[in-house]
Length: 221
Image (cartoon, rainbow, N blue to C red; front, side):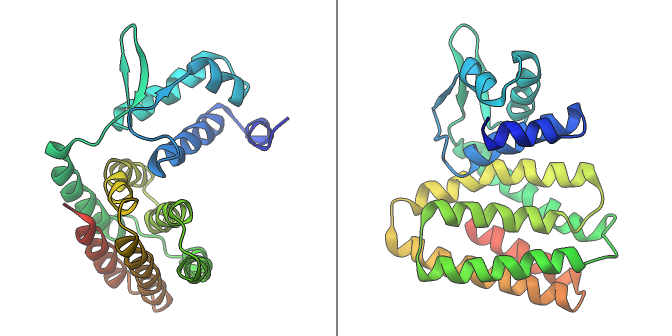
């Protein structure tokens, strides 16, 4: 039994299991482990998750609503390619949601957020010492997910993560082609994480949002 199946079996309910499956596939798509155009096999995924195709299809429908995958009748399910026409608009929506994160139902307990960004700070230092695209993608996603946890509004968290997924692959696809740009991106990510950590340490959520939005706009086409 693999670790993923054990995690699924330990989940408290159906929704928790679906969330684990969703987060696993979202992570693989957003970090380019599943590159644009890749065909996903329902049979293979159902076997990996040790589940029937019914819950798996619910997760795939979730990902399709977020434009991370697309189903083609009689052909299969594929990871979507990046749409240049909608990318700029998605970045605008992402930045707007990032502002809302600190304005709508912000948590009054920032201890967990502070600890997460402190840990991310250390890992960014390791990344800068030994740059790696996979580690960069993972850290960038974890930093964003840590930021959206500032709001206690679950719908807003989900929307933020959705638009992160629609935009992040643009950056990774470009970085993979230019080593100098990639090294600079690692440094920028480290500075970004440190800035948000510093803002949260003094409970300045306005500053945290400012840094997050500035980082997002820097990535936009």
